[in-house]
Amino acid sequence: MERRSFLKKSALSTAGLFLTKDMFSKPQGVIYGHNEMKYRLNSQWGALNPKKTPVNDCHEMIQDVNGRIILLTNETKNNIIIYNKSGKLIDTWGKDFPGAHGLTVQHNGKEDFLFITDTDKHQVYKTTIDGKIILTIDPPGDVPAYQKKEAFVPTETAVLENGEFYIADGYGAQHILHYDAAGVLKNSFGGRGDGDEHFDNAHGICIDYRNPTPTLLITDRTRNAFKRFSLEGKLIEVIHLPGACVCRPVIKGDYLYAAVLRSPSLDNAKSGFVTILNKENKVVSNLGGSEPIYENNKLTPLFQTDKIFVHPHDVCVDDEGSIYVAQWASDKVYPFKFTKA
Image (cartoon, helix red, strand yellow):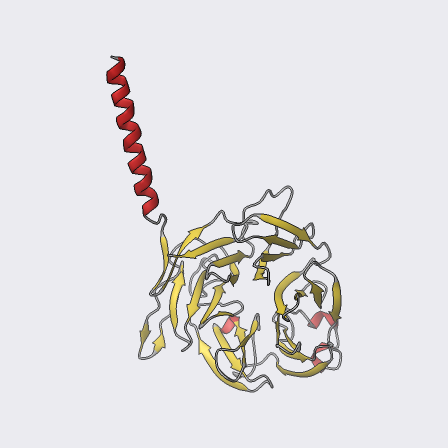
């Protein structure tokens, strides 16, 4: 009896060993996305103890020069949460940004700086990586649209290599404001209006260096489009994305990534996904969204297919190609991570 029991236990142990080996020899989990851009989801990547390190709206994320992932939330117990790429908490700071919304990193080869927009305080701040404020931008009173500070509700910034920067006033008068490195206003363009050169929710902005001449890519979220401008503010093209209320454009390598807050064609406002475009401005993949289909060279309307997001608000693409997603008004959920399949 003892020998028979021993043999039975040995067989089960051996079977378990082979089962474990087989499990780990194959990638696990559902694959999201299309074509060459497919990913696996880790929805627990950034989860922390909400009593110690809470979040409210998770608005935007960046990676700093040291490889750390930095999250901006409008939770004033810790506006900035710093992770390593495995999702381990490294540090927190910030208690003074109740309207924390836009987060941009400036790499200058020596140290990183952050640009933070605050929609409640109607200001933009440049800070050191550990939170020291070194520049504050107030509403630009020289621009007629901003005679009242409440008209200035900045949502995003983009920084040139020479330190000059742009502010997108996505929740205010819809102007794009160009400043020199010292914070002196140089130019403004856009503003609210019906023509393609105007905006209705200029929610995000970035510098596109994928071609020899740098350009600006600016979100027109309500109109489901990105708009390309010269650095001087001249409209170059409109990239239509029907069905996608896109947030800020994020460029990594040859691809453009963006969170889609929702699909306007769906009754359910909780209908977001992540979209990825190639260098030719064609959608090649949607994480949690429909397969991109072009008919007569026009994109058919996109929509959510998998309910993995509530209101995705931003993406960060790290140096390994993984994607981190921050969500707004999502019951205070922490960021998700997607790794290439």
